[in-house]
Amino acid sequence: MTSAPLLKLDDVEVVYQGNLLALRGISFDLAERGITALLGANGAGKSTTLKTISRLLAAEGGAVRRGSLHLRGADISRLTAADLVRRGVVHVLEGRRLFRHLTVEENLRMGAFSRSDTAAVRADLEAAFTLFPRLRERRGMKAGYLSGGEQQMAAIARGFMARPSLMLIDEPTMGLAPGIAQEVFAAIRDINATERVAFLIAEQNTALALSVADRVHVLESGKLALSRKVADLCSQEEIQALYLGRALQ
Image: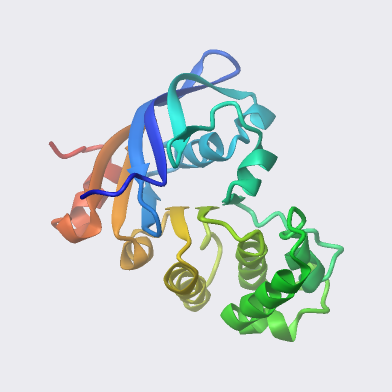
């Protein structure tokens, strides 16, 4: 028996400024506790897809013109971003967006702002530092002084502190050295395995994304060009063909 999806997008069409079409009838499901890679060239619609799910579109003049979004069967199209955080959907935006004047620990605690379970928050803070040992060493340092890789780790750890069931992560390895990018994805794999958090990851590094994902969706010019289990892909060349605008039939 197939379990119900964690998240379902059905024929979603998104416009900016009332008439600029950004997403064209996107439909896909996300499984509970799965890791899904969202791939595509710059401008394909990856960030827009994540902001559509997290309800952050309006801040940039975007709106869902058609289609529906359901979280565990419940319509979320009228919820606010804060409502979604309380329901377990956390968005780690491109560019990290840390509070640079606050310490690492203060940034992580901000991720738990909607929680009142003080003892559990303390336990999760320790779990976050276990996942990211570099952050434990720098817990009293202001976030603005961290390296790019450490800032990305802090951004993901802050999202983890909200106790999510789904994390949306936009370009987690942008600007990072290969070794640091590997560390970031190893932590994502650990969070998924130990905390059973599902992930939707928009990423340019195809090989790294596919190394942890169990399913992949590829966007091309705002349309879904491929949706498949990673185990069923013929090769990475299949993905690369889509990046070059040669969608396979």
